[in-house]
Image (cartoon, rainbow, N blue to C red):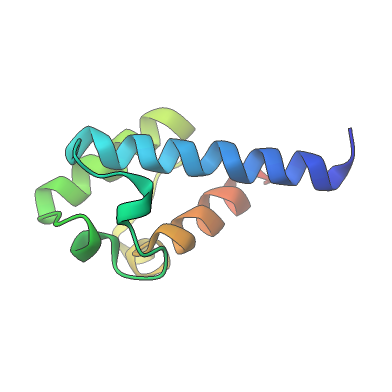
Length: 90
């Protein structure tokens, strides 16, 4: 298996994890509803409690804890994808 294939697989798998976590708090949201570079809270109409529950769902799925100081690094779908991909490769 090539490294590029592995990275593409990890990225696709991580996208699915993020979408699943979003759908736990906003079940009506589909990936095509989300502008990947806009604030996820606005894109999915998440209040502060929904956002925390989204982060909890991600932690359950990935084991990655996201601290409040890291929120600006994870406020869009693409930023979250990068953050989780980097954390999973450590």
